[in-house]
Length: 391
Image 1 (cartoon, rainbow, N blue to C red):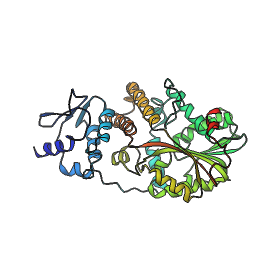
Image 2: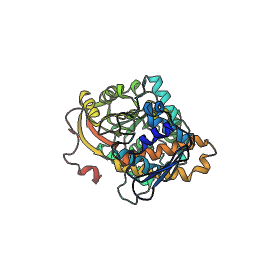
Image 3: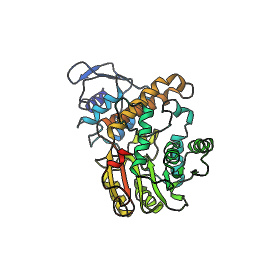
Image 4: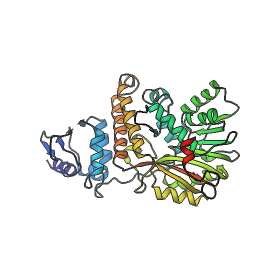
């Protein structure tokens, strides 16, 4: 009875939409006015220690283990929790203790491989044909996911104002779509770097299949160990979220080191405008070692590394839509996914996609593109932003 009372205290003010909750003793409560938009059923009690220590981790694991069932949109439920000032996601008395993290080169390699080396076949089931696993860019509401991902690649490259024959480094190159587009369509000599063996193998094969061996190269290595002449341009998409708070300064310093004087870089990554944060459930199950840096934090590191900001663009709503489309694809692919993954993994991944969409929808996190230059801001760029869209 006591634990039901505690859970009620946690949930009673956690949502700004009408929610129905059925507790482990069978008692049902309704919070908010109107017909419930989401129904939650608890199949066990939760101790004070579990909830105080880390409510988001405890409840996330309980959902994975079917100790909690949710009828309705998980995204809507979590969005409402972020938007409610008194929810367990915002109440200082219930916020989780941040986990300690390590970001040695060995640990970084393990972290990356634990996520990206699940297998290319898994990602093919719900990503688009480009295998792009980052925020898309919807120029038009009717853009398909594939069109929006190609839009994003061109939007990034166009911001660099690239000149044929110049060199580009893509740090955290994924499955190679950006670097190979830069090579084929912008006549750049490109190098990609990744810690994922699955990604490295696929990009290597793509380079061979497309006959680009003389102008494109992929390296399986920690970005901190790269030995190469400086580049004219650098791109890095969805990378700095993985390096850890303690290594952010080094990350931006390496970008500066790898750029030629007045070189230009486009860094695209998840950022919190409110300041940096870690989520214990995401850290444990999805992105080990993940840390979302704050906007001011990134700017400080950029300046400290001897670079300047030429342009900043926020794409929060684009990532919300991207995640919603990924989750739709994931659900459509469930018959195939069940052939390779168990139900706990499926519930975990669905929760991850919907929770992240909710986090972007509520403004808890953002995704920002930083256009930066080594030296005075934008010395080698046009004086207005029109070039980004006219290209």
